[in-house]
Image 1: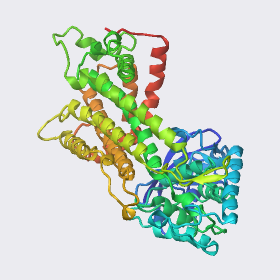
Image 2: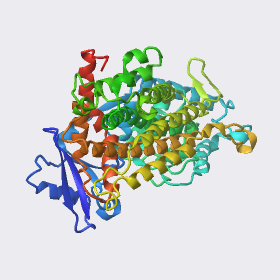
Image 3: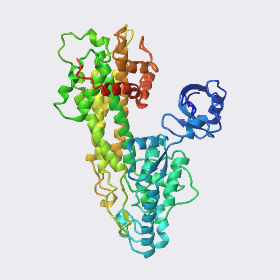
Image 4: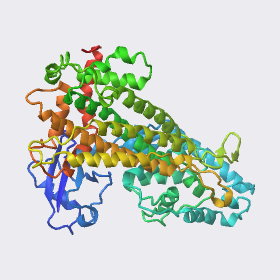
Length: 573
């Protein structure tokens, strides 16, 4: 078995990828580090290190057998002692969590803690619940059944059993488990919601959830129907995750752990962040395609776009100006056809600001909705400390994130729709003997068409459950999962376009495009060579898609954009 070890040194911050041959896969994962210690290229390997699977951010247990947790050609992230000493922390307070922060928590880049204000709020809310239990007052979710059984009063001696039974009965999900990164995001969001102090959960319970996120690596939440129940039951020691030393099951805690929109929102936040980066990088790829196809940047003149006042359209036009302005970043391709007779380009070139622009505006709108949901209390009933009472409501309903994520899927899909239309065919010498990009275009076409089905809104559907008590539902879980799939397809299609654009650039050589776009070309060529004759294309597509997922295309171009905008260039000719 061959493993790629991407080693990060804390002393220098240098990142290096090495190939490790695992001839005996029954050995523990720690043997990978032992081999790295013997390499001359690696220094600073001490007793402290951390191994993660690059694909999903999962922390690897040193004692696990290689054959149980890794497969051929997996990439393992190796953080050496210095790289993990400077751990970053983020305080969850229920009010200030951002999408970018949540994504980093999912990737294991942040450890979490509760803010002091959150600890006080949680303790006060718990006292309200304890007082209600002591008084014998009948309150939904504390000493009653749930859903259709809300009118059945539960005796004081059975309250602990009530909460555990709730988790057991609601752990009815089916399907593949959530991945480690998504589960970390889900748990972090549940902690953040409980930190607001409206749920009545005990502080020690919440702190155990924090410990689970920080110390136990990743936990698995199975299925789609009741993921929070699977998560909470695992934390109680009955799931397939881990067993804490202290059992849970006090009054209302079971309901507090599972009542909310955190699965919809955590998956949605991931889809949203990836959609944002896909859209930004799609603007850059479009610019490269435009220059390679000998398009004119005149259509991006700011005077055109100031007459239509959509912010996203104006931002995309300005971005294209910066990337294609031959007077600032000379393009030999542009200069070679400047005086040609063509008046205007096809819509997929000329209308990039108008089409990509609304995608960017949609992403900003969805960010507002998802950020609000991330920092909201979605429990039921709600505990109000100032009033010393609980009130039943409907904050658990997922309609807000469901509608927003349906909208996100519709918007980001259009990036791939434009990308597919732009792509030139085949792009290879000795056509006939070589097929070139022929079937890569088919791959893009199939993903674009699949997205057209996936963008049908989930949230227009509803179905009555719980004997008619829950008579309207959001279908938000499906909306979130579909949104992720649509984004994944867009990432793949734009990767294919980027490959095609770089290959098209080869046919212009020795002429060069603009400096920022040449930087993109050089980046791509670090992982994929030019297409001289037919070869297996799947690895090339995957390698470039990973560049996009790692945000490398945006990172390499951003300094050029910043420089251009700071000097206030435009209009372009």
